[in-house]
Length: 247
Image 1 (cartoon, one colour):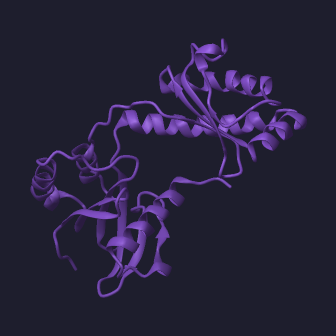
Image 2 (image 1 turned 180 degrees about the horizontal axis):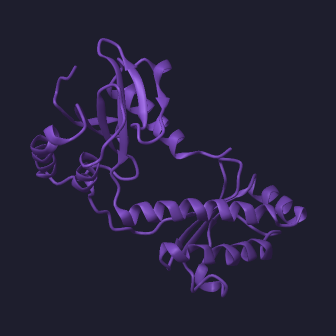
């Protein structure tokens, strides 16, 4: 089953409402297509309100997250193409499909080139494979591609290739707010902006929130939004709301 952008927005909005806006009628939450805001709902005591959503995430991290997802999907597909006898041998020894955790030496755009060598390694050791760390420096097909490799049993029941690579995290809060503030939307009800953190947490800089609050207060009146919410799904916290009360 595919998971669309609208599905992701609905899921995020429901998380936000559950933790920070319990007056939302959960049965009223629906997706909308542009130029309408992303979500519309009924807030008890307020009425119908539309929400435009936007994730605050650095470009580098967003790209790495997207590439990691594609890597897992492509690896799972190639694993299923292995002969049944090989897969049966691997899963018998591991207790299920393999979950492979790797440190990749290349940039995200080239991660896909690690799939075939890892698959070839699994085929080579299928009748002797064990969970744990693999000494990649001693495996010719892997040593130039990977800095580390660990084999576990996949708790999801599906083979997967997972990567951990340091990625520079850039704060894009003001950039996202500025972009959303300049847009126009079609709506017959008040529009709120829900800017959220999901792939990365809010910055820890003690001055960050003051800078964001100043920006919102200075530009909010010229924006299409009756209210602006900043929410962190990392800790289910409401980071900022402006104005603090709104009909």
